[in-house]
Image (cartoon, rainbow, N blue to C red; front, side, top):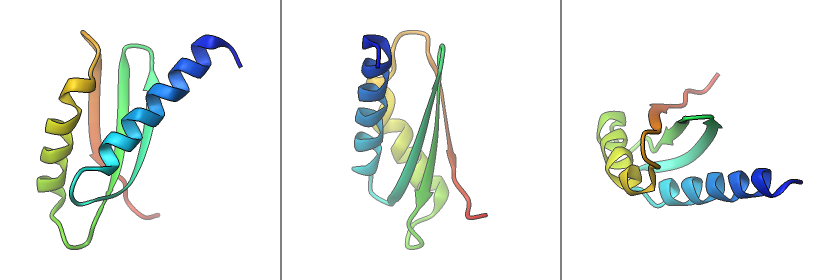
Length: 78
């Protein structure tokens, strides 16, 4: 594994761990694409998705690098 790949994996894990601390989040998936981060969260049945997404957006604001675009959405069961 190259240093770049290892650093990206560590960053992805830090993002996942930070989001799992958010009240109402019971699962998370993170995809890093150059210049963009996609985040999908599973929401606790006791919470509303809109409230949880708002908390996730507030929580990850400090993790964002410069001009990166971050999209956060709800993962659904398929």
